[in-house]
Length: 199
Image (cartoon, rainbow, N blue to C red):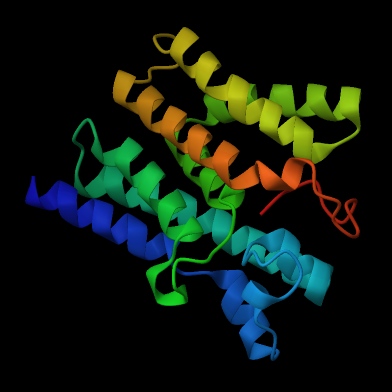
């Protein structure tokens, strides 16, 4: 149990490492008070350019994968990996050192999901592509993937070699992402075609 708690705290700490915020701060910009107010890749790219978007997205993706991999190696308990997946996203969305104002969680969630299950990640990408093809909106396609992904995880849990804890953790992350993106689904944001990835 102490090792599980440590892993979860480490996952939250990794999530708090807001690459976009520190990259922008280095260039004299506070993402929390500019643009959408998010410290994620999309806001960083909108304000600082495509290179800033790419750097922020890759680092946020990597921290999600790192948290899940650490949990897998350090504490192979049923709740360690799904717990780390949830906590790294929570840290990204509510980083303690930034007064709990961070990004919207997509990038670390994708990174964590990649580390959790590559087949599940690929299946979850299908609704994203369908949503984009129908609505021509990666934002709405992404939300479709967030809704459908956990359903696929529960339905295909056995062939994908997932535990019920994995599915529960993924479902909690999906609910969190829906909550962080509710306002943006109807908001008009400048340069919506900047990137297919949300913050």
